[in-house]
Image (cartoon, rainbow, N blue to C red; front, side, top):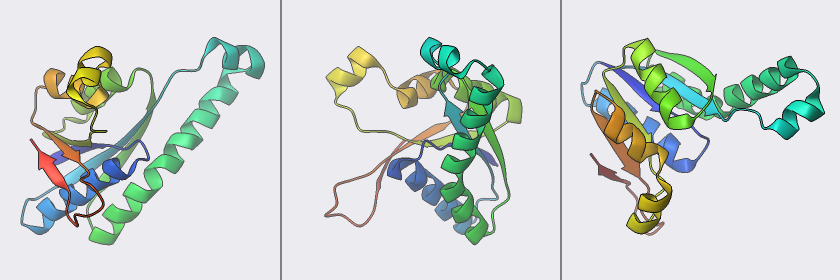
Length: 153
């Protein structure tokens, strides 16, 4: 099973990697696609940089750096993976990566917004959950007093 793991550098996105590793250790044959989506450059950045290639290089380097902790976890667990750093709207780009790589599932973190705030602002995980044509597992971190994370599916 090929699993897409969107990584944004947050603790909860790395917890999603740990959940995937636990599934693999429990017997699920898995491989992963670690993905990071960098938001498109702003007009200010384009004007200041004078060269769009410089912005692309900086964005690609930032994305690769963000993926490193997830790569380290998967390397330690001996799980095969591919990486993708892309630019654009996070939710739509995640769906595009999901389809291009032929992933069977997405495991991703959620920031734990309140229902009202999530309804007003939307969220990447909520949009992926409702748009993806494959199962999406949303991982949340619980408070520091608990040792395990909670998993909502």
